[in-house]
Amino acid sequence: MAAGPRWYVARTQPHAESRAAANLERQGFLTFCPRFRKSRRHARRLESVVVPLFPNYLFVQLDLSCDRWRAVNGTRGVARMIMQGDLPQPVAPGVVESLQQRMRVDGTIDMTARLEIGQSVRVAQGPFVDLVGRLAQLDSAGRVRVLLSLLGRTVAVTLNGAILLPAE
Image (cartoon, rainbow, N blue to C red; front, top):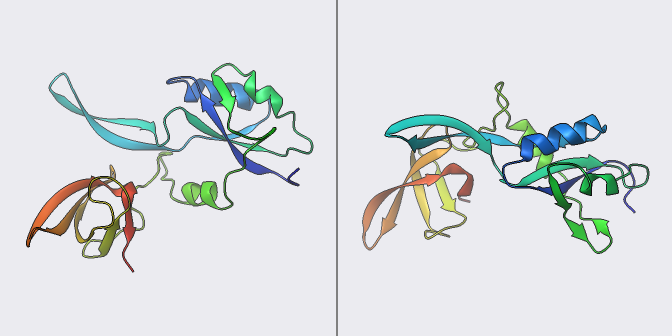
């Protein structure tokens, strides 16, 4: 068993991240549900909403040697812990801490904190995976405009900033 507190992942019921976090915190568990601000079109209006960065998932800090971690599975709003054999699977060290460092005052994650206009970036996933381009524009919601070289010409594409990495 791992010694000391570590972060683990609990799968929540659909749209129940807040309920699961509140119920876990009532039991004395420390939770973290990273959220970001995104724009969505609804009824011909563009509105800004705060949504989970990882829908249906929640980080829970546990010390497996002394916490009653099995109680997490029975908590209202939680579907189950992500397991590795008979024990919860720990999150790689530093992942949750790096997300917490990117938190804004309003409690949302800044999706563009590590990016700067003019910087070379590599697309990490999606249809443009592994393409390198130049960052042309970014906004606080995490959307970025990248200039990619496709078929012999430069094309501007709008992407989620979370799927970009600085090109080395």
